[in-house]
Length: 163
Image (cartoon, rainbow, N blue to C red; front, top):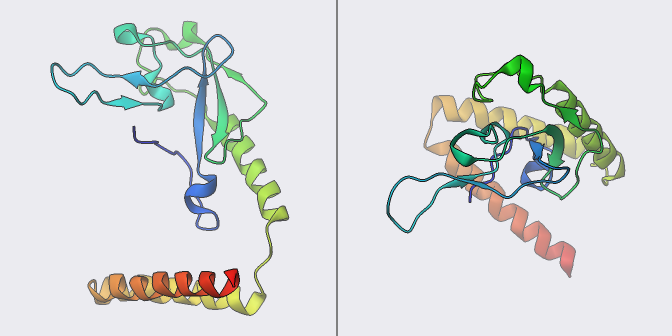
């Protein structure tokens, strides 16, 4: 099953990606499965908009922020099905600012607890990112090669740190 994150940052990547979580009966339901006929592969999702009660799927009662690290927001944002009618959630005008604000506040806590990078290293990393973007536009095949060099350097730096 593919995890479909709504929010992501360069600082933390997949480790603290965020999404809108769904609550049904006060807890998070399992994934929604899609019947596509016969076959061994049954696609599924945990995307919030799939929990609309259609085709025997669970109907979301409330939303909240979730993070890839396992954190769950305490605030619950009830869904008003009377206003949205029987439209699919992806067509309804659902306000996601609450879960987004909760996840953003969570990231502030994570950033405050993270080991800070030295300012010269931060500036160098931003410069490298800018140059990679320019290179991707000017010489598209050179950018992945440069990214590969950075990736290998990352592994080498990690090996030095572990010794």
